[in-house]
Length: 157
Image 1 (tube, helix red, strand yellow):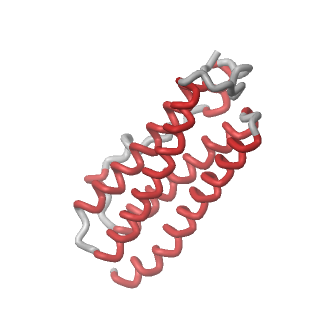
Image 2 (cartoon, one colour):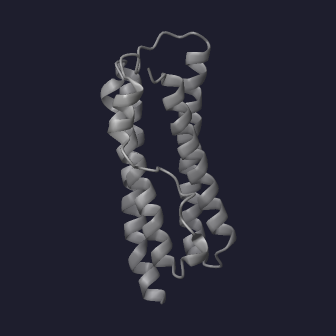
């Protein structure tokens, strides 16, 4: 069986990797407007990581949560398929424009949404499910925000 703690560890790692990547991108960009966007994205990822970490801490304290008890490793692997859910595969040295960078980040956010949507049906506690739905909505807003920024990037080039 895939343990809920393992799933939460993946979610925490996703958010941590996203935050680091956005902050690293800020360090290599001189564009103040792009850096404001990246800082906002990094802060959002940090906030989501904290929520997943708090949920994980509740489990460590023995709080009852039936989340994922019936889900087998095989079923979970089938659900996520070949999705990497990671920015590690991206060779940022090959990205030449802000537009390409924004596209990479939008794809990462879409992968994150997919992962969280796969988790949702297995969450039985209504409050936790609602909080996850809020995070999914926020991730979708991130994608929209990245999309809104693209015209500004294109106008500069």
